[in-house]
Image (cartoon, rainbow, N blue to C red; front, side, top):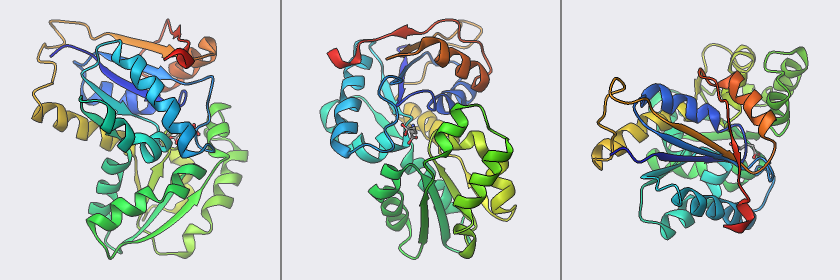
Amino acid sequence: MNAPIGVFDSGVGGLTVVKEIMRQLPGENLVYFGDTARVPYGSKSKNTVCKYSKQIVRFLQTKQVKAIVIACNTASALALDEIREEIDIPVMGVVEPGAMMAANTTRTNNIGIIGTESTIKSGIYNKFLHKINPDITVVSKACPLFVPLVEEGLWEDRVTEDIVGRYLHELKEYEIDALILGCTHYPLLRRVIGQEIGEDVKLVNPAYETAKSLKLLLGEKNLLNTMSIEEHEPTYDYFVSDGVDKFISFADDVLSCHVDHAEIVDIESY
Ligand code: DGL
């Protein structure tokens, strides 16, 4: 089926998920929406994040998407259930695939989670992990400064090393052997986070796990695009609620292909 997959995020960070989908599902057409006018979601309430997410879903449905991926951890944590109740196409968040990988990886049963304030406060990762294995101990930490650091391009800067050190030192007191990078931006800090937390701790990237689960889900539902990449060039359409230039420049840093155009959408009207 060659209808596109809709992917959305609070802003630019969801491009880390897009990158994994492009890599693991190279034949699929994608429509991305980044809510760059209303970012961040990570400090907002459930009500607000649900309202914003539903508007975006309505917009994506006008593009005839066959499935929706909520690339934003915060929106996955707070809005996934409500969105699933409203529409009848498959909707996938990033939390469950990440939690499943971490639960399968850990040997000590001690798992760390880092994310935005709202994701951590929601307790959603703990819920999924305990459902898979009630013996798992979860240590979580909100790291609100990571998002602005990434968006400023300071992926490997000394300032970033310092702040990563401050946030993660607490986690080092527990014998975690898996750390979930529970926010769209954090995989871009992978090197610094890995250095700080130590090589014995496996870093779990929900973006990668989500693309893997998406492939399985589309396969099960007979929704995979069966045309080969030789037969068609996949289309990637990008929409944002503000700041096209900043979006394009960030996309060029994250994705392996150049983004030459993004369209502004008046998302409040959906
Ligand atoms: N996309 C958000 C997330 O993954 C991070 C940025 C924000 O706070 O909106 O939780």
